[in-house]
Amino acid sequence: MGGNLRLMLAGSAPLAGNVLTFLRCALGCLVIEGYGQTECVAPITLTIQGDYVPEHVGPPICCCSVKLVDVPEMDYFAHEGKGEVCVRGNNVFLGYFKDPELNSIDELGWHHTGDVGMWLPVSS
Image 1 (cartoon, rainbow, N blue to C red):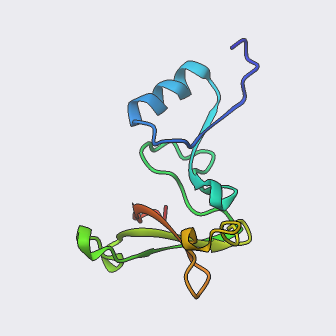
Image 2: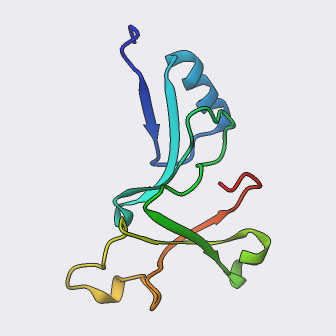
């Protein structure tokens, strides 16, 4: 890349650990992986510069809170560190325009993403 590439953000789908490591070595630039949704103005979490452990998407960004809720039909329970990802904050949309049936925001303001996630020991 001629030394011109300084940063790469990946977030449309999880990168395999070997792919992430290869990109960091081959491109010689900072590669940050994240998790997000259009409903949350893109990022919800981002890996931190200097964290080179693959196969996680980092902690929540500063403008939102993230929690997990139980998904009993899939045998995922928040108290065990796995569950549906819910997010709320200034980056979360208010709902779908003229289509409230699609809204996934509960009475406490948590947007239920429909995605399953887990907390790692390093709080990401």
